Length: 259
Image 1 (cartoon, one colour):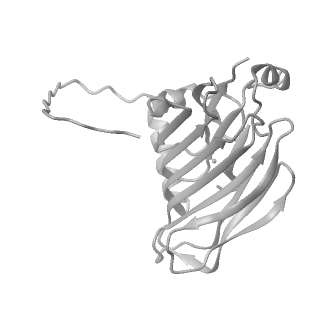
Image 2 (cartoon, rainbow, N blue to C red):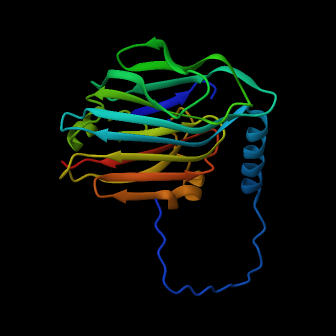
């Protein structure tokens, strides 16, 4: 399993038309159930009480070879503070690999950031062979007067993906969830999350989307039902787009390897 960014306080559409006919069917709106009301209330509370939010988080994993080496690029777009809040750094992010035999090969490294009126840098606070905690720091205080902040961080992993079904079955016999997966944790308010994974050309991998409770492998089917339309298989992997992800959930792509 690869998680490209869980934070401590806090991990495509084409429209073409020639003639458009619009049909409006008027229906009696369904009365929202208790779970829907609770979800709406929680999201509103989170938005109001966090000091910042992001327009989007995108995280892409490229499985580079049959050894299971992976390059992960995690980008944040439109990080903006709420009026009255100030920060000296973006809250700490933890990247880690828990696949048996996996390790961090290189990074995390700040690779790009949109032009910003203040310097930003990536500072590592703790790093082991399998996990790293880092922060994006701003030399002077970040305030709500600054424009939205965009940046990307790249991390390379060694043997982060098990490349056969037999290896997966053996490694995860006693695990709650018995597949490798690539995930993003929703730990602060954001408008959209996009997760993508690609595999080497010609590898017959079957991909799926799912949702866990935060920091766990406990499946959360009701949230998956809400967002499952955003999952799509691609020629070499999958993409999972989540609009208005709910703080407190882990969104993931998992897969079944050929034998």
